[in-house]
Image (cartoon, rainbow, N blue to C red; front, side, top):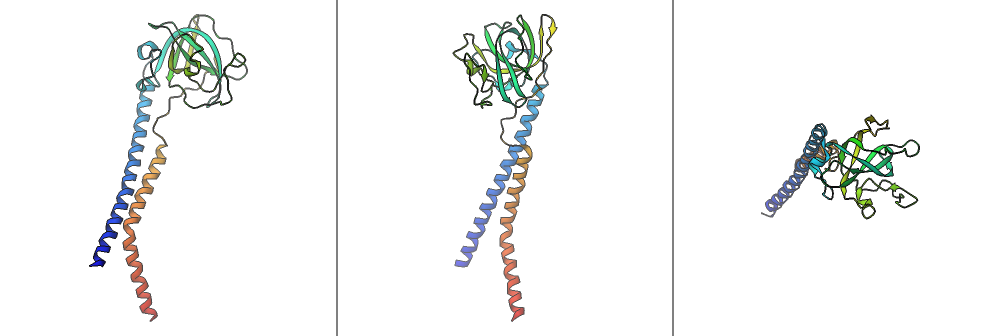
Length: 244
């Protein structure tokens, strides 16, 4: 009787362990599918025709996730200039644009161009921009950067850094400039390569798939162990009888 109970307990333990491995594999498969779905959604959003910034976003309002990566058009005047170092595209010139074609006053940061030397002179008059709307950066790219009278370096591209120093209400997020027209003339800029915000699902697609394979293999190995042990015992018994 004790032998039967022991076998049942071992079998249940193996089934529970295998079930856990299968569940982990299914969870990783779900994350992989979710990652692909988010990427498809972002790609689709990034290809939608440009709209006016004021139609989808307002100052002092958190950026709605459904509008991240949208192409927008906006007019205004540049009022300040900064440097964002340590970015993926190198050091960037970032300008603060006071928006003029919205119902309420507001200002938004514009990642304007890559820096190869010093900062360039900003257009003094009204400019018309086409840009991609991206969420504010959350992680510091240049921890040594400081905003002061002697320095205009940004640790990251985020309007939150300017709170208290700028009287105009700020938009959440920033614009990645694609084209700029000033007084009817297109600016000659070292345009930053276009990019879309990365999915919020952690990891990479093939990384999740690799974990799916690993967890399923672990489940198979777990279920195979009793048969392997039984076969091994039989082989050892056969070898012992042969030697005898």
